Image (cartoon, rainbow, N blue to C red; front, side):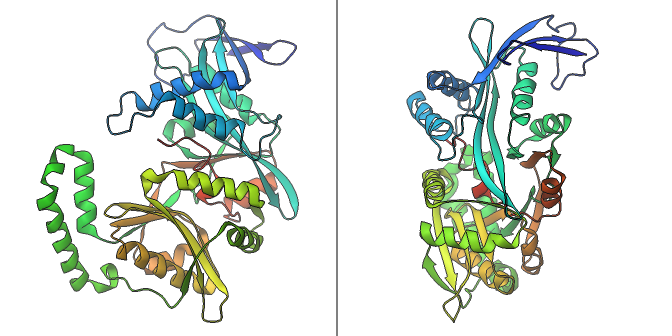
Length: 403
């Protein structure tokens, strides 16, 4: 049993956990507190340094492979994302939780989004960075932060990079897993190079042998391309590539997403803000933005992806006319392969499945998990049947801090 009371402002909570309450995280025997006084309130500019310090402590302090970003740089990013985004709404703030002494216990970032279902506006909210102070009994603070977020005025809540624990918490609070959007397709382009890159990533001591191992990987890929040209030799399509600017992308998203019942709504300001943020995430590679014209000059499709020469490339968004899906994928695979990428992956969209299967791609299913929460059955049904335009551009990829 859990008892919670709130003050007249609706923010202060007294949480009394009972021993029959099943914990979400492992707990030491007889370690349940009796009373925890938490204050959950909106994020302000004065909280940013403490939130940045919490992020560094949780995610970066013990990660030798991650560049040690300065707290000032992290603070600037958090302020840009959660206090200056183009959709900011006083009714949908990011939230912090502090104890009775004013110390930060936890944080959840919230970014409002505009969507549309069959012509009706929908207020959506994307969550990111649910973080709790390590070493303290903060499970209940995490539950209450997420519960407060999900009880907000938004009609649709989204978290599209949830881990297994995050998925469990969402499930217990009435959220749903979108299994179809949690599927990732993967296409091996250079198996030898991919294997070498994977081994070097796990065993850093082997990196000094790269001058020897990488030529071996290249030799094996050349042999595979000769032995199985249908799988490991890639030729471009007849589509004509052009650089994709923000204005063209906005028009294409508006036109192509109209085929779905539930879709995002952008203007030039908000879309440009997202693209600039995507371009800053260069640790995954260089963001390439390509539109493809057919022989008549019409746009057949487009893709945005991070080109990582010698490593794994990642698709941010891909869309095509039904008759051109295969040709757009062929162009993408050839573009990544000819620029040295070893592997390319992306989130599954239902209309891509036949063409991906024909091109010997394979599927992985979470984590990360795409989680949703909505009280409107029409919205839930649209997501569950895949009748939604929802790429990584529309979730937390660009609205979270990535070192």
